[in-house]
Length: 101
Image (cartoon, rainbow, N blue to C red; front, side, top):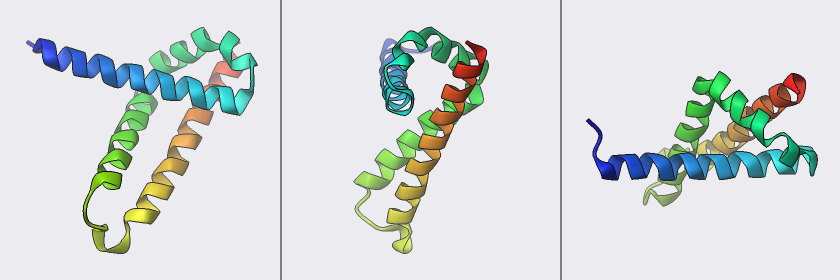
């Protein structure tokens, strides 16, 4: 059974994910993304592994940015490449949302 704190943390994480997802879609698709918000949510539901990958990458980026060491010189490249992967994953969901409209 999940504790109330765990549920709140999960809700905060989902809210943060949805905000970043909508922001990415607005930047990628312009003002028409607002009309597609319901479709984006359905794509997230239809592709839970992509949604999970986005959440995990966001967490990994945050962890790496706050880490006091540079992971043997790989930290900057890992952050850069993870951010690029986030852009592509969000674009994939936005593409499906546009096609399913």
